[in-house]
Length: 112
Length: 113
Image (cartoon, rainbow over all chains, first blue to last red; front, side, top):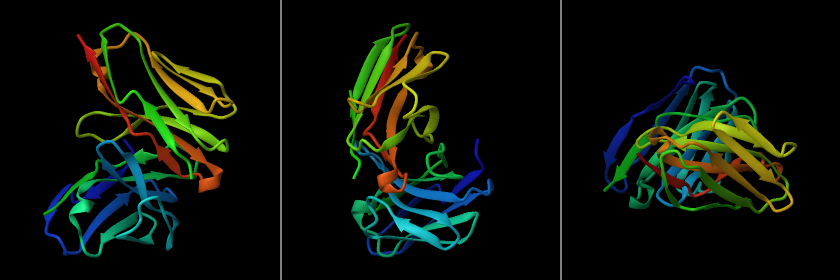
């Protein structure tokens, strides 16, 4: 399996609190992605990064921000969590677009 | 942007039978089509992919076909086994969207022993 570690694996928090999820990779891949997975919607892209400090929005970016200060780390932040952001969040990596993406184990986030 | 539709949403087959999952996409510029398998509580894992310059690709019991004219692609699993039971996702990548993947909604495949 690709060297991708997501933390935390599970989190329960309250509406209005800030939340940060971390994706750490040991593959030195250039591209990193954050997806959310909800029943019936498959995987939807939140934000992605194509290099250190280079990020862009995906399909469902509202309410989320990201940062990438090092090649190996990609952080996803919910500034003020809402119940609609309860989901499973997956990080993925690859070395260039149109190459296979490899996924982490996911973070299950519940916002009460 | 790209839109990917996947059918059926659930599929139940008897062990040993074949299973076919179909996806359609909207952007004719899409050029990369991966398929992922996700077991319950696990990460999605790539099982096969195809590029737009190829019409068919096979890997043991799994095959993918692509019809660019009709803008659809399909996953074929032959001689299904209980361990094939999982959720399968198709995806499409288009240069018009920065080569980002758009996923279908998923198909839950159940293989009955």
